Image (cartoon, rainbow, N blue to C red; front, top):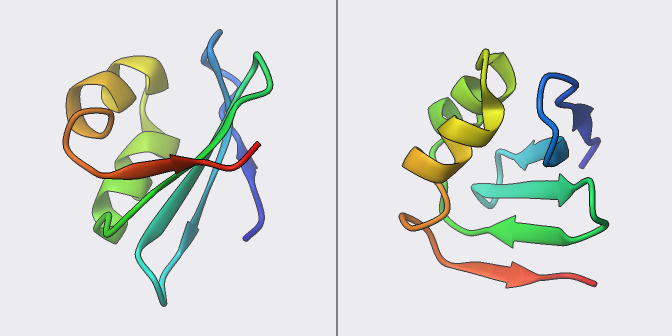
Length: 71
């Protein structure tokens, strides 16, 4: 998965999506790397297109999907 920069966010650095597995990968500026599982593609699209990615992540991702820390 190729991470795409989320330059408009002070907390989120980048995100990537794997269509085959529905995995959303998010890297935080503090170095944390997480995979969110079974995420629909449109959720990723909204995240990378959002004016405020942090708000989108908080409202639509963080509590809605299971995740695992990768580092």
